[in-house]
Length: 468
Image 1 (cartoon, rainbow, N blue to C red):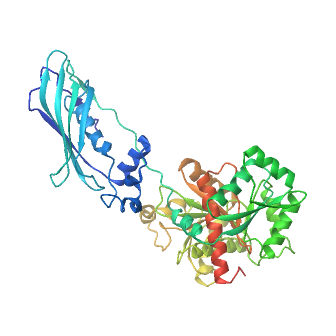
Image 2 (cartoon, rainbow, N blue to C red):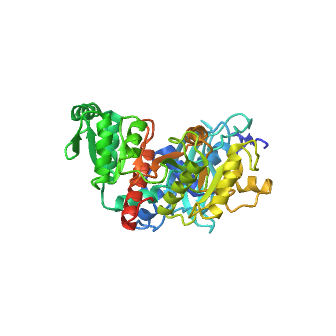
Image 3 (cartoon, one colour):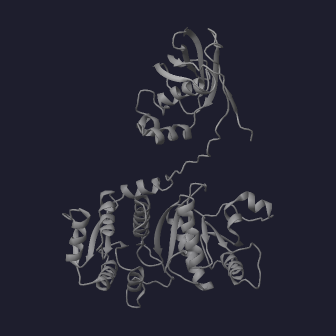
């Protein structure tokens, strides 16, 4: 793309009546970028519910977003590069709404030869020809002619992590769920327990050595007043006690604290635990990926190292059941491989084909399953069309079923760290949902995980059924 050449008008070249304009359409991205850069998060500009009760009844752009267009004309068109902005008077006459086309115009009205000072009328109009801003700019005009290549600006994309907000709002609206925080003996685990309580998601029950829990709370600067503690001797006992309480119906969710995941899950799947079902337990990452049009689940990335075909069936069914609980009527499952054709030398392609047939024969229910699919044609309709793939799943997957833990974990972590995704992690297949969070997870991921767990627990309770 050819770079724009910027030219100016010197003081001597400027004539009274000279003018220049630029035209911009204001969109949601413009408003949110301006808010991000300026820090002006006034809800009148960002929150439709708030704005509906405000003077204009709808979201309006920041006044200074419109004012910034005037600055752009002065600095790039008239007088152009070399102009020094001394002052500006603005009058905001009408609101600017998303979708409006704004034309910013400057017009020379006065020249003061002693210091190269120029006064210009500054007017912004909307697509109806109505003035939305007026004012007067005072500048020092350049004294020498300049031609300069405009700097090529970086590409900008917004990372919106709002796809889980509806789930979080719904979870907050439900009655509080009691959650066992298992062995919360680190500052991160204690802070996590307080966060989900303050968000109105869980009533936490801290299970572990009381002395260590209180020491961690003190180190975190957290007051444990009003938070119940179930004292046990060590982490193994904490996991066992949490399972007992879940079986007895005294807690509805288990949350991993500072013990190892294997220790907690070992207590869950023990033969006599009471939380085991006939279903294999599995981990699901609910991913909010800014570049994808909807939330997507990656499974399994944390528990099953090299799952067999039978185990993949359970992993697939667990993820389908989760999305159906969350309101997706018929989740689409892409069974991933390196290629989209069956190759007898690649076992994962044989498993993918078998899973597709199992879904067609009713051995996997509630969703559409297709594979093998490579990652690109699982999530990109264009990629699928280019390869001639005809599928109800390709290009619009809700679930990515990965070949093994290594590939699933790498894919999830790449999306988190390279693509800015937020990941909510749950263990599925037991009689209660289990939240597995990492110390490195941001608050948004911890809240999303807790919200999903609460919704699963609440909807299972309402349905009156548990996994078989």
